[in-house]
Image 1: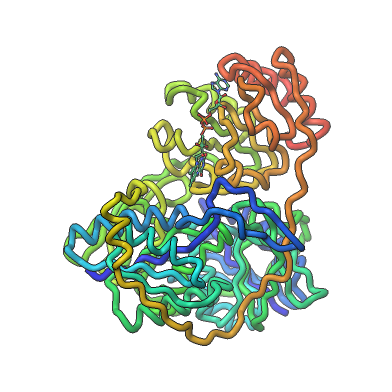
Image 2: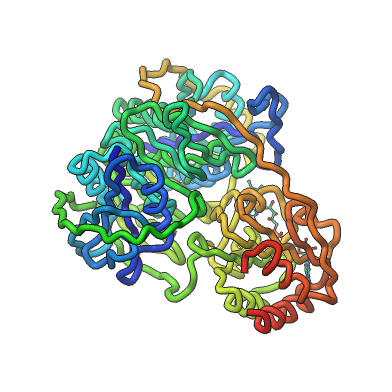
Length: 311
Length: 243
Ligand SMILES: Cc1cc2nc3c(=O)[nH]c(=O)nc-3n(C[C@H](O)[C@H](O)[C@H](O)COP(=O)(O)OP(=O)(O)OC[C@H]3O[C@@H](n4cnc5c(N)ncnc54)[C@H](O)[C@@H]3O)c2cc1C
């Protein structure tokens, strides 16, 4: 069984989530592990995390999900890949179901563990916005998976991947990008190992400096609750929860967030949760591993100081 | 404009999901239009008004979904189609939507970014691939000028402004429009709006739920004294090992 992994890259390097997808592919492949990456992506890490081969395609500009789907489906056919793996991302979440249709494959999104092969090809995924998990049997001969962060431990294999070039036939898309606004240099919420989020308890956008300072100290991304993005204190792409971004970092720090069920839906699969809230009865404490009852304006600067000393 | 809005019928997001015999036991819960779909519906109603078009709401589900469909009619859809089947997986649902779309040639098909029950986020992409039309997700703003749509699309860490002609599929999220609450007149007229029930087209079963599991509850939250934040740092280092 060959496995194909689509690699998203940033500034010429594979995204960390893409390397996790390679590690996942290497764990489950019974044949070749093939990584599909743009020709300006460095290949050393792809081999190191388990790719036998890197297929390189030439890029000109940003690909639409439908174009990624064409590219990936053609590569999967050329490589006889039975399983196609994507790391969860906005673009990949759309490309994966499109590849599924092109290949006649079973598709599963938000996969959180390696498949169970004892009953066929069964994957575990989160449902009801993190309130439950389900095991899903994928019946078709081909499978397409999008995996969540931390679905597999990353082990270095120390391989060197063979590099081959690949020239897919890609159709022009009717979608024209007119303008892009993106903060660069920040750690992306979905990629981050640590996330620091602020809620309405912070009282106004002018108080985010201390959240950003804490995040910087922890090498964390910043997030927020829905009312905070609704009121435009923070941009929408930082909004975490049921109707925002779902994160599964190693550490989630919630400051001045009450812990409504819809917020928890976006964070409950975090490994460790720290809650700082002045109300000892805030529901978030019930979903947390560590808690401090106190005023964020007092605690956050002290915590940042303590971390600076300790790190 | 002929607009199709696809909605899913899901438990209220405030609900805890009870489990019985290893399956979700949804019988006692309140059901709603999935929140992302509700945003899409709100914008669809506005675009229908702006273009003096027609808005059809589609739901794949058994008879119990009709109250949810009527709510969409009360909010402003003109008519409804219910595909009489359990929405077993994304491929099944997408196949039904694509079949109806082929017969009716909509200018735009709106869905939510993902449902709040199975969180698949696949239906819009599958429908677009089946119909061979473009798909924009997550769509946070959608304006029409003739048959050209201008949208804001969220990307990691920002957004893009994109333009494309109809027909297309868009998977929507806030702040595309404010959720709309049906008014009394809406509720009254919804009762007499047409709701057509159609039989599903046959589909091979691509995925099957084998079992469910409820996440293990977190251990008790360890409370740390507000005067001793250094203790939290120690715990994160030596116990949780996350920093
Ligand atoms: C369909 C639906 C979908 C939703 N989706 C989402 C979603 O995706 N994400 C989301 O976040 N919400 C979502 N919500 C909203 C959710 O129900 C809550 O309203 C929201 O999460 C509350 O945000 P908050 O905790 O920031 O604000 P609040 O509930 O107002 O809580 C503020 C907290 O700050 C604390 N506080 C105040 N001052 C201080 C201080 N000085 N120091 C420390 N603590 C302080 C307070 O004790 C309180 O606990 C959704 C709601 C619905 C109905």
